[in-house]
Image (tube, rainbow, N blue to C red):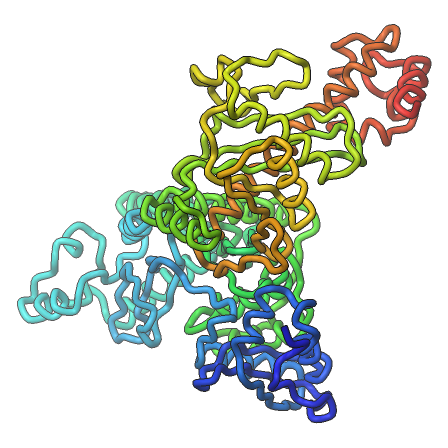
Length: 636
């Protein structure tokens, strides 16, 4: 393999000014667009020796046949040009967030002489005021139906409105008081537009002003014994309060902000956006995409914001994000320019540190993580996708049959202590939790030795029906709701796997192959998955197997690897907790209840080990003498 690509320009040819660069393939298609404060410094990273590049970057660089750049005056101009070119060329190696669904919005057509309120998914109506997006159509329709009692504006179609004008008879909504009926002259078009503007202002977050004003009018009418007007104001106030009850109050009523949460891994990214206006959550938006190149969180934030506020979407003055991008100032200027077309005020990007905003940001992030998990679960539950993944794995690894049963192994330890290993099983691309196993490893030299010991113990069961009751036999985990079947109750492993997977690269694969050779086992395919580059390593192979980043095969590999890691970590934490419990109960005067109080007070074993004598003595039932004994024992 060559050290670099043939089209690499000479270092002196690349300018050092800010600019935007494009990689093209032999047919001229733009593969990737990027920006840089210093073009020479940025592009030199792509033309480093190929073996040092990240796998996905290497694939992009080797797929391209040329690179070109455009020098601009400032970093802000580079940001604008990059955004324009990504939208124009849609490069396959750029992360472009596309919504996987069309969200409903509440729209008020203020550009019309007689404005109309409607629920729509069309964002192309010029001059219309949009609110949302919302996750449920029925919920926003219900809100509109309630608010029409307080703001009786037109909600009928143009055809219905014209028919009412011609006949002089209003529709049903006009008869029941949910429309002021400008079609038949009950109210002037100017007064009707004022109602529409009030409706828009209320939806924009100025609800406190309207509810207070209606409440004052109701009391004034009641004082003057105008009970008919007071009843009408009462109904309007009730309608407003009913609509407001459907949106949660999360922040102060003078705060307008968008809060973003992002959860991502090597293959996908999930975004969650909460739209807060007037301190209330007015809309929620979420989307998930597959990633092509490896992108860190700050760069993801920049990409998300550029795509979230395209078109007619106007950003608020405050945007809360999980991390600030490197070019924060330029991005704020970019978003401020977008906002300036609709309303004044500079946009500020912030990371919430404390208080209600931080709590809400944590909620948004939790939703993003749940969305990513749901996306992966649904993808793995697709029978067609699983079948394709198994077929692709069979072809990529040169297996005689599809890997209908796969076993994955991972080792875990804490500073060389409490060494454990896990075995998870996937059959037909789905987890079989009743067949998971976990291993305790009393002594080991490193991770490769742990893998060798684990595989050796597992392979010993392939051709034996005897139940081993020795202390080092594997233990069935019944945690997390995992239920044991008849086979596992007998302490046996299930049938022979088609594919053994270890978490790691060449050293771990070599150790696993040694365990297979020592056990005399043949006919089982072995591979390892290296997490950093998501490469698949085979025994005695100088180069890894590279699976496409968006392939179902790589997704299945990643899922079984992550499940093995989770299962090992869970067991390792249980062992650590058990170790410190048994250690503490040996101290005279410290029984199980006080040990439980200690762990509950500090929240974790790590915090308890780091605590000083004074902090330990603050626990209920633990005095200074006992605290000193605990402190000394934890450090012995």
